[in-house]
Length: 336
Image (cartoon, rainbow, N blue to C red; front, side, top):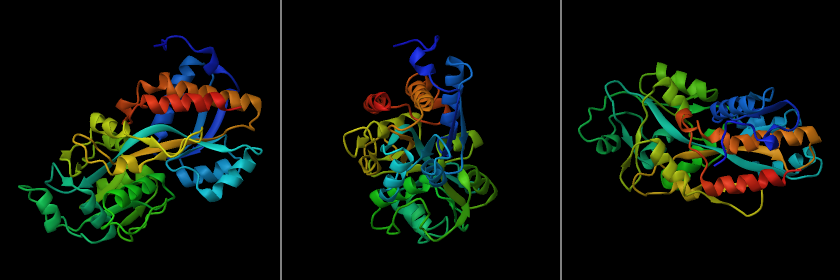
């Protein structure tokens, strides 16, 4: 393994300052990658604006930022505008960061909470409205669940975390979650808030609340989160159980547009495997940048997939599996 003590010349090329915008889920990972890049290559920096995945994709397509961070890949209607922005070259979705989604809650007196996908689907669609509902009581034997109203907290901005959450419910609880998927929350109940920080604040200040949030934010705020009964046993959310799920990921297609087939994770019922995870992408032009911009983006991404992996676990993320890293390296090298 190459030492991180000295900079890689290939990872210090291009202009000093890049701009990016989008996903709040990857904010802390980008900050980590930025720190490592700046240490290896003094003067290098990405200015990242965490406005949400949907806005990030729009800003990238409009040419206002060098690349986007997004918890969802480009949709079909965005492919042609993105190629136009890339001067006739395809835009690629590069899954740079993986992170588990925690189900954070604020229920007085409940230190440990167990849910399953079916119960979560019913909570976020309004079919379960009280914490002492028989469905939840059966999942938590011996726990005195209070007669308290449940307040689901959801993202009301265009959110890739919401998209991944709803895709999980669709895959893992198809009979109970019939609301569909997308970056807009479709459950029809609860309290909507802006960005990941808004979810944490709302859950902390609302008795009976439950929300979905990236594990790193939950860890930092020290908010409790639920364990998942997947059908293969009760699974706590830990670095190990999230990594076991991410290791099972597969790609939707060959080539360098690395969209993932996340249903290969969401339906997992393996023991010690926490399937509610998201992948968050960097959306880049495969070609068409100014040469100094292309070199800098390749340098930043190269740093992220190599030296940047070391601190991810402590920030609440899952380091890249080898098979994903290999595909990323090939795609980065193919950018022009």
